[in-house]
Each structure stands twice: as C-alpha cells, then as structure tokens.
Length: 119
Image (cartoon, rainbow, N blue to C red; front, side):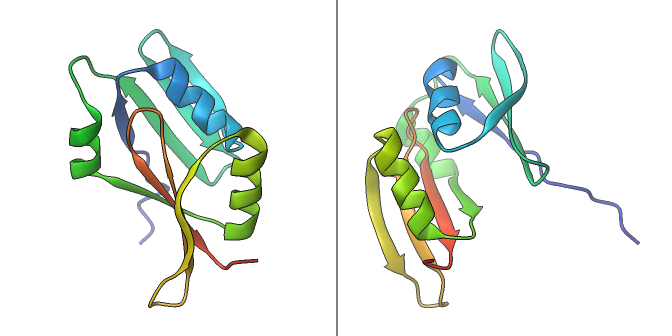
C-alpha cells in the first residue's frame, strides 16, 4: 500500500529573509510564503518550510537536526557555492559508505550536508 507521498519538514529560523536567500542561491525557489513562513521547493522532488521562531538560536538548530540533501553531483554543488559566494565548511569528503559529502552552514546555523557521487 502506498500512503506517503513526500516528507515536508519545517525548519525553525530566526531570520527568514537570509535563510530564503541562502536556499535561492542553491537553486531552490519559494513555492508559497506569508509573513513568518516560506515553503521552499526544488522541482517536484523537495519541499520544506522555513518558519520564524523567536528566541531560537543556531546552537539549538545544530543539536536538533543535520539537514542532508541527496544530489547528483557533489562537485556541482561545490561549484554552485563558489559562484554564489557560499562558504563550504567541510568537503568534499568520501564517506565510508562510498558517497561523497560537502557541508555548508546556513545563515541561521543549520549544517546542510549534500551527499551523492562526486561527479
């Protein structure tokens, strides 16, 4: 039986504008928004929300979640980050399970890990 269609997490942020811009630079678009919320999408494969939560801090975000996104090419993500002026925190790194990862820190403190083949 097929019940589930997709995972749609909502990430708490302090600064919605900077977080939206970060994901736009990575190729995502805003599917819907209102004052304290934005739904970010990438084609029909990824959909997640960014929700303002007052009093939240970067340290708590990192303790709660490592945001990992599967990609077709880690090298392509690295080039995109370079073009858009986004700093790579770690990588590319070949992991024990055979996939490559590159880690970028979002403006609100999330560790965003992109995982897939190198090229």
